Image 1: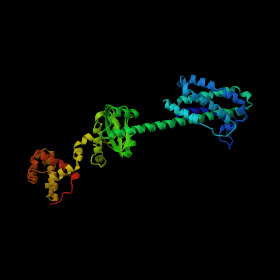
Image 2: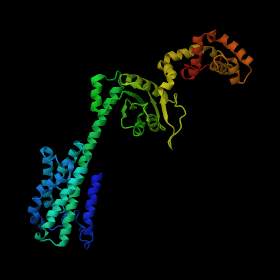
Image 3: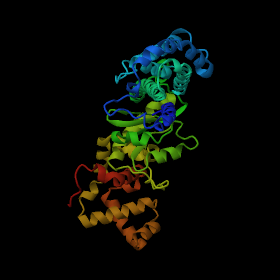
Image 4: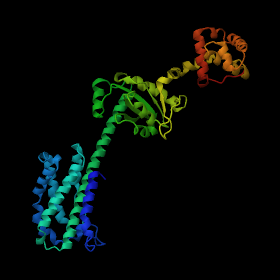
Length: 436
């Protein structure tokens, strides 16, 4: 229930309080559902002139007491309010002495929709309902001696009026919520269209991009990045991000467009949003380079999802698990070698071919020695320390390896290729290394 509806309910409870204290007369007959059923039917005819003449007074008091309506009572909006007041008064009289439901709440449902379309909250309309109820009750109570009603009947009439107004207000709240849901759904659909367009190759530019952003009610940023996560995780990630982020499901992926991801405090938002959720973010780029961020994030996501690229150690925030966000720019070499798998597979097969002719134990020792030596940039003493062997042992092993690799270890480019093949050989080897 909205704040306005809550206030209206409070007013109804306040009005009913004295009724409950009068010998229980406000309690409905067990077979009846509505408080207006407890009012004598003759009351409607006796009050008709007074009730129907109150319409203009209600309009004037609403204009005077509800600032939002002071200048809005002309044109279509004013006609709708006047029609609402007129229908409300006539229907109230028709209901007295019956146990019928409200015959028609469409007018009040539509008033709620109009409030949302005009960009207002429900506060103004709820206040208008309260003002109208007070005005009508003052007019009714002023002439109560002429209606032939007992004090108990007057109390029942008061409860009927407030309950009736409560139902009108509830219809307006429902109309407001309906319009709100339509607008939210429509905006989300337009934002999905924008995200989908940004993900395509090439993305929209110039007037088309401006139109899509305008339709989506999204301000185009100067800098942005694209983040990708699992489709099922998108909602959990997106709800922790700033309101200027765009999120949608595209091609089976959860996609988020992040304005100014390197701005103050944005890293904390990203860490919180990806706590315990695997995700990858492309580089931060200008608006005209968004395809680069899209391509990078798309390329990295399969590796992140498969666990071949993992985030670095990051502390958790509060009680949440650590962020699982991978920054693609931290893994450019991995992405480069995965860009064309066939080329990398051939590189591994070619440069590690000498290992295939070794026994399993000799191969393990050779790989260990090569890695230590390459990591030490050719420093035999440092490599020996890593391997916990004598430097002379390393020299002996290297001599044998240089023979096996036919000079590749003395050539800078070939040596780099061997280092890369060793680093990624397990992922790209076309077939396992076998003993010779």
